[in-house]
Image (cartoon, rainbow, N blue to C red):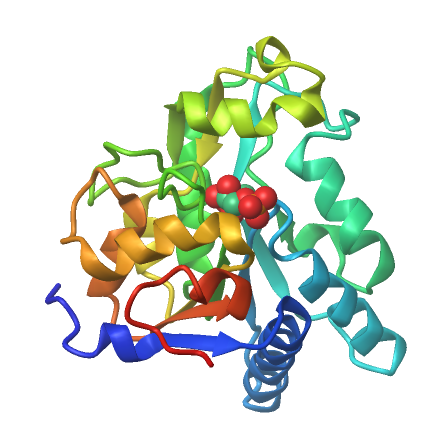
Length: 260
Ligand code: F6R
C-alpha cells in the first residue's frame, strides 16, 4: 500500500460533535440505502466508547422515522477479555444498550468479538471472525475512534501492519483511561480481542472520528508523524478512502489548522 498524497485533505472539521455525528450517521444510512437498492447486504464496522454515542442516537432516530436495519450486518471492532456480557463495561453490553436494543437489526447479523469465558478456543474464534467478515464481502464502511495513545480498536502502540483479529495485551494508557468506568485500574481487564490493522484497512471506506480537546494532541501527531507501529492510527494514511472527522474543540489543538 502506498501513502496517500492527499491524506491531510481528508481532515474534515465540523463545528461540534453533533454536526459531525449527523453527517456520519447520514452517510451510514446512505450506504445502507445504496447497497440495499443494488440488492446487496450492507456491512458496517462499529466502534464503542464515547465517540460514536451520538451517531448511534441518530441511527435510532432514523429507525424511528422509518429506516430499516433488518438487512444490515455489523461487526464490532473489539471487546475486553475476559469479560461477561452482563458487565455494563463490556462492549457487548454497551452496543445493545446504545443501539441494538432500539433498532430492527436481527441478532444473527450482529458480530462482536466477545468470548466471555477463558475456555473458548481463542485462535479458532479469531480466525472465524475474519472469515465471517470475508464471507459477507468485507466491511463497506468502518467507523473508528482513536485512543490518546494512537490506538485504533485495541491495536495498541507496537501493533503489526499485517495484524488480524487476535488477543492483545492492553496498554497502560488504555487501562488507565478505562479505570473510572471499572471502579479502579486493577479491575480493568489486562487483555482484549481486537480486529487487526489489516482487518481494518480492508474496509472499503473508513471514517475516524476525534472529538474534544483531549484528542487534539494525538490528531496533531497523526497529521505530522510518519507511519509507524508506535502510532497505529498512522497506518490509516495508507488507505485510499479514509476520512478523519474532527470537531473544532479537537482541531484547535492542531497547529496548522485555522478555524477562526
Ligand atoms: C472501541 C475502540 C477504541 C476507542 C478509543 C476511543 O471500540 O475501538 O479504540 O475508539 O479508545 O475511545 P473514546 O471514544 O471513548 O474516546
